[in-house]
Image 1 (tube, one colour):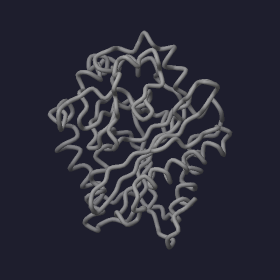
Image 2: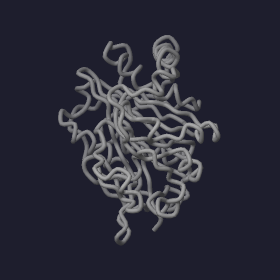
Image 3: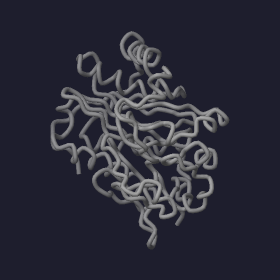
Image 4: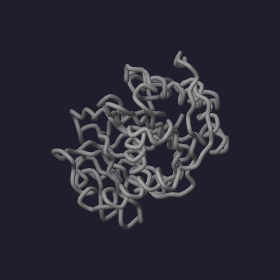
Length: 305
């Protein structure tokens, strides 16, 4: 499947730096620049150090152990989009596509479908039996065990859209991740074995190098959006200037990090829920009626098979 529009161009950027505050500021900055007509449609691949990313209305005190976060020298960031907590590090492939609203299909469910199918196709090409699970997940079915392997989300304005995706390439820092994350004030350490069977990574199935997998993912995304790439770095006087402005004035500020934008609530951890239903029975009672907010970052997991 691909968009049946005229061929369009897409600026392709790969960042080597690992600054989590910069990465979360990037989407908002590029959205503003797109709306102002100052930059072209862009796909950016970002790199991450150990980071917990929470949604704009998420209660940090209930879903993140801040003492453990400091102990493990990890970073806390808060997104402008909603949804649940995610953990990111150098084991993930993470991308954002930022473009004018009319670059994408009018039906946002179709947008999520296009992105998820491109990710699923990339995984299947590497012998990972992934399938699209509407509206924005990719899963593996291994017997009775259902495992999340992909997720897509977006932030939408009237003039522009940022759509996200990520793939867990390698399972790194698993015990540290569980030490830092909580669900409604409940620690997860004692549920390591139950949780681990629902978390996986590309290297469980394939030895494809991380950069090669990025290349294949980019190729499938370009095909899906009927786009041709042109490689160009972020520009100092437009892109970098705006991103750094927001990084310093907003995303590094403790008042932004620790205080929810709206009424704070426990959202839980993105990896363990499909459409509000927990796929790890041992921890389902922590948020029995959880329904995740729609605008969330993409993450990808795989579980043991």
